[in-house]
Length: 627
Image (cartoon, rainbow, N blue to C red; front, top):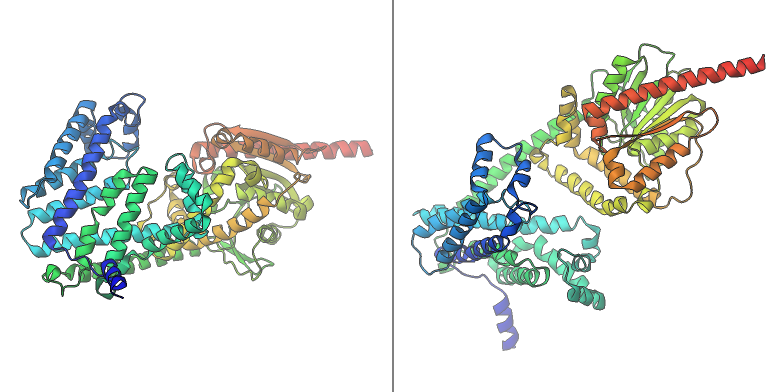
């Protein structure tokens, strides 16, 4: 019985280190990260020359939004000679930091390493990783701790790094849980077979011993998701958890080639050990833990502000425009819509159908152009769960439900004697195509704007590869926004390209979990139904205009073939069918870019005018034949 007790004792309990020891250990391990980093960059100096990943005249373009002062500073330190000199200095200082001693000058050395790493980070934008960011954090904190003579300040800095360490593991673990491969315990084998981080012998072992690989995968998840347990039960689990994390990083370094991760992340472990040791131990007897109360207070305040912002955005997303109307569909959902009658009620009304995780405001440039330069009426709406539309169906969702909602909207909003043209972007194009059969003779035409095709997940390798990442993104966005993290969300670039009066409302929807929940519901149905699709598209007896974005078809030629098939499904006697590729546009800028949207609007108006003329000519021909 003595041996098991000794083993248990060796594996459990806190790791008692003093404040001074924690600072010394962390700064020395972090110095190894800086030393390795600078040696690597000097060994790869060819990457700073023309054609290399770190060629500054090429990579400085990403600093376009930086201030002039920042750009001038980066230009000053990014010359090949200057960069090399800085790395030589970092190597010398890192070597000095490995020497024994507790002198305050070490604080200056730590700060030099942290500041220069931050300054060089844009210079080496490609190839940097989490270890560089961690070293900046640790070196800045240990530098300030060395220069401070107050134990309370030093403890606050050590707690700051320790909390950052806990957050990094915690977030990494829970983010992994969003992916099917991690939940299904197949991620380890998947990573080991990649070219970037793979290791063929380890991959072979995962295939030979699948159960062991499964348990190892779940072990990594448990380690990361439960890392904060080091603070429970008087630190009894600290030794086991910290040791396991260290072994995890060493394994990553050996197998995946992430050598700097070993020293980068383990440099935080001494601070975790110090802060998780109970104050009943002599090594932590004088530790000041008031930063936890301060942090909790700040966190509570931030959570309150985040909640208030989320509520305000939800209210903005729900309220709609002053002229918004509402209609209840056959499935019980309440649809919010906006309608403009147009100058000529004899002309068709154009009903716009947005894509997945998209807003009706995405069509703002197009609808504005059409309203100003044609007599067509315009109807935009939000599908159930988007904006102010309420999803109230009690049946399992399928795409046919959204098609029914679209048909109900047309019949309830557009006068029965008036024809309609459906204009759908992305998934909206597929919904419009499916609605054609039920609308029958009321349908004047369908306009497909970079539309989805029901076979795209089976035929397009690019779409197939993006499927899992899209699901993870939607899960991440939904859970993050429900957790109140929307306050941290930056306004995306496409938003600033929309008309000014639409931006706040579009962003309120984008930063609201409801839209992402609706998108995930739709994506589940899309993936299920698109993967089951086989055969050819049915013939649709109406005019059609198919507009493709150049970047879409250039990146994936199969998309152009599928867009052509959509056009072919409309061909027949008396039907006008046109296809075109909008040069320079991508999937989103086709709508959100003023120049591309204006061109698309012009083509839509010209096409619809042509269909009306063709129909009138056909009627005249029929009348003449009858006479």
